[in-house]
Amino acid sequence: CGEYRYATIQTLRVHDILFCPYMPSTLNGQLVDGQLPNSNHQKEYTARYLEALPYDPIWDRLRFDVNSEFGEVYLQLPLETRLWAVDWLPANILALQRSGQVYAAAASIGLLVRESAAYDRMTGAMPSENTDFARWFIEESTTGYCTHFATAATVLLRAADIPARYVTGYMTQVECGKTVTVTAADAHAWVEYYEPVLDMWIVLEATPANSAPEATQSTTQQTAPQAETSPSTL
Image 1: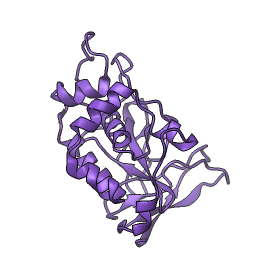
Image 2: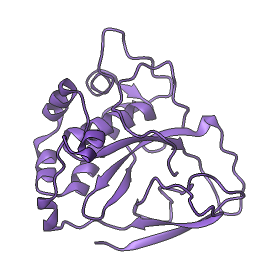
Image 3: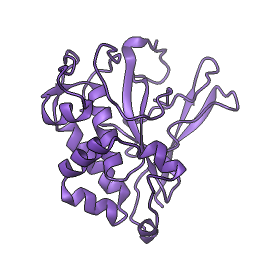
Image 4: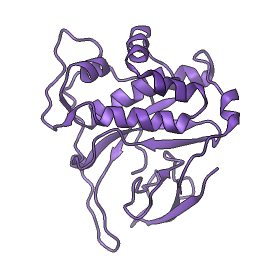
């Protein structure tokens, strides 16, 4: 199921969650087990990265029913939102998912969202006449920041029947041997989608590269999907 790479993290004190670099420059892979509690009260631990997710025919037999306990949480969308999102998604992406190529479908959705608008931390609130945050961003807004991109990606993943959750945490640049102070200005939002064969959550960064982390603006009107939003790993 692919080759694992590992990165060791050391913290100065114990935290309730495991802080992990989700896209280290020295590793070309995807973080797995992205949202984990620090149940063993560790100051030093190892994060796993997967080099690739090859296609496996077993995917054809794994589907999530929106009425199941799992589907109710991670595939949940208002009907109107699901209808426009499915209609908006390119047919080839839906075909990838239906053929069981979850990784390829998710990667394609991430690329679409990243290219859908320019990154701008000063993007204003959604107009009052709009009621669907993700649809407004995808179809009308020309700019956005992490909240916009992560919300849109979560909606589109769920519309493609890929279980997904919107996650908030922090993102910052770190260097080995140097102390970094993380503040509210480093707040960030991203997406994790569930890979059924490997039975793990995989991080999907939907915000364009080279964008600075930013605090989620509470003044922005949102209709993000109902999902877990507890802090996750970095």
